[in-house]
Image (tube, rainbow, N blue to C red; front, side, top):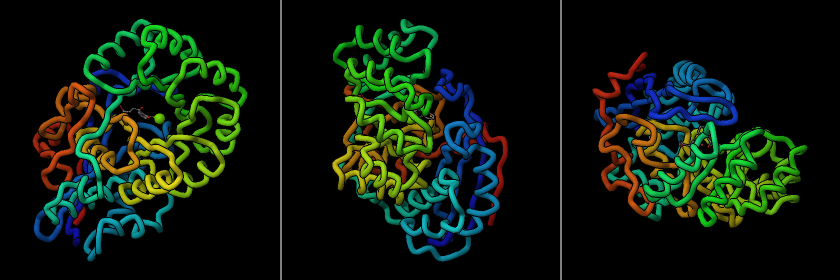
Length: 369
Ligand code: OSB
Ligand code: MG
């Protein structure tokens, strides 16, 4: 692969419904897209999953833009690259900044799959053509509103429901939901809103038979999560804390979690995600694909990743219409009545990138060649 030009764009997309977590509320996304072009004029697309501020992790839209433009793009441009699998290593002189790295690394996988005439999911080594899907539901005003949202998602076919929790919106809302839906696959995500001092709360949550509790403690912690897991029955799932295959190995060895959520951006792209999946697979730890309120390009990459063997649990990848009036890919991502998404068979990410729609939403653009 020989990349002759890289286009960076920032697009702004309004969410159909605001999304609230323990760390804040999002109404409009600021998304950096990366388009790479090779000597033959073939293109690959990647999406940066950094948020609008440094609240989920350190990276955010503007830091990712600056890191891509100043450091990462110059590394990959105008040189012979053996394969997409080598890009992570090429970028290793830059520390951290995994979401910025993933934006360009995933674009390379899309381009390479297109060069080979293969769907991205097959090129990655995926084993299933349909992925099981769940939804992540943000913090609501009242338990009744939450229950109404859950009813709607279950009617649409989604296989599991994840609700966001924070202090003051936890045991009571979970209890109400469980009363109304005694049998559903239910889980909660705290996005690091608690400490070990809250162990009493987590013991109380054990009675609700949650599939798992996601990232209850600090975003960069593994040690305290191990202490918590020893004191509760509900499996702990780590999200924020797992940034590399080594993190996954350490967390598993310490007993800090029984499930891992894999996010392409958080671990630095497809090659790293495959390694995290591998480590988990070897240790009998199931994984699932997380979401970061992606536009269609990031969503398409998530679908491809979730076809890998270890992704046995329903993830947070859901239909475009839950996020956007109009997605930037055609066709939009849709979910079947039994809560699955079909991985497309056309080359690369397998969806048409709608350039005129992207143009409409672009607030800045820079081409480096
Ligand atoms: O922790 O999984 C998370 C969204 C933004 C930041 C962090 C998270 C999330 C979600 C939404 O849960 C998943 C999605 O629907 O894309
Ligand atoms: Mg999470």
